[in-house]
Image (cartoon, rainbow, N blue to C red; front, side, top):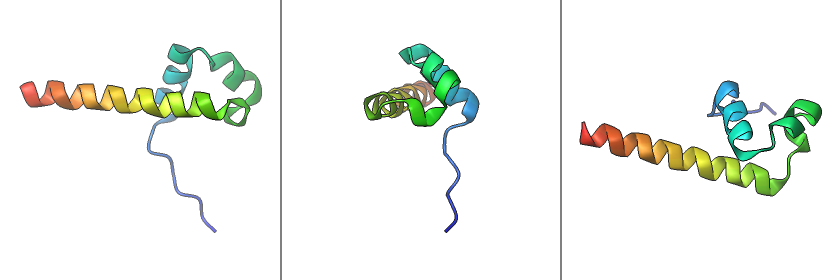
Length: 60
């Protein structure tokens, strides 16, 4: 079974982890070390950023 590639770049995921306060956990334990709540918050924040970018693009 092949694994589908991620939508978010690694750089963006690390940026989100830093913003949300669990970068140290990722650095120490990898992505498997974060909680499901942290993962959910990361996705939620990514969606907020994307929606904001689309709204700004629509205004231009």
